[in-house]
Amino acid sequence: MEKKNRYEDILYLPHHVSKTRPAMSIHDRAAQFSPFAALTGYDDVIVETGRLTQSRSELTEGEKLRLDELLQEIRERIERRPLVSFLCFQEDARKVGGAYKTVTANVKKLDEAQKAVILADGTVIGIEEIYDIQIKE
Image (cartoon, rainbow, N blue to C red):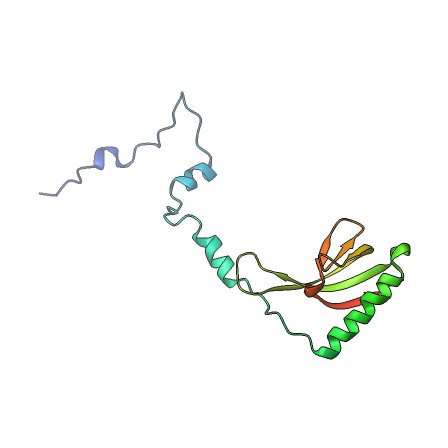
């Protein structure tokens, strides 16, 4: 006697299509089977860990003297609001180290009390953060 498959009566029936509900899109069907994100934020932590920062270098006495001379030159031209490029070190808010960036703008004021350069757009750069200065005009 031949063993009968217990699902043989429904095995070859046509696929059921609902008359009352619309068919689900392939995208929505796939979403049902997407992996469960048990560790939310894990991908962000991996990206943050892989992000590189630079260490701050120390200026030599000669470089500090040169920067002082350039700041004095800017002080002499301050009424004309000279266009200047500053290479600055910006500390990273999340990791040890930071990044060097160049800021180019017109200088509004040299604030001796704060030891800062105030630019025309309101940006404040600490003199201790400056690594290079190029006076454009």
